[in-house]
Image 1 (tube, one colour):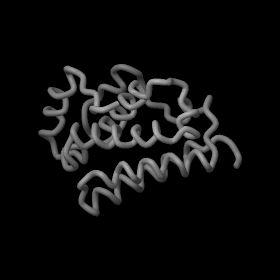
Image 2 (cartoon, one colour):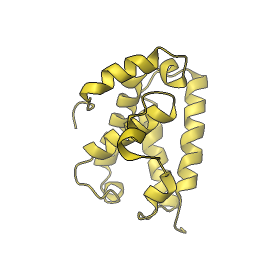
Image 3 (cartoon, one colour):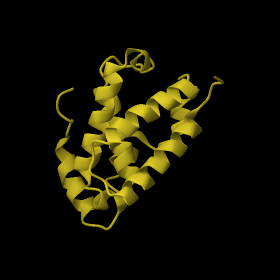
Length: 143
């Protein structure tokens, strides 16, 4: 993974979404979320213990899914739902053991990825609050 993946339709959809006053547009649109997810998965790839939790050897598809989900969540293109249906985060994570260690490791890598962005303190705080709450909600195992 050396370059953030970009699909043909993404640039057009990102431009359309960026024309609004959404959170997605305010933080930089597609480029911001592509960088965020790319930086996150670079860290996942370097963490052998955490990477072992991912069912795919190639993290590229997971990176793309997370990018599409985050873009949609924050007001960008709805590609995620168009391709995969309703996000149903807890259901999609249910088969995987998500305990306190996994949650904290995920948050550590996401915080490091967020730190590569040039977000305003307000946008950083809003985004981090969401990630923290979402990560806590994904825990499905004791420990």
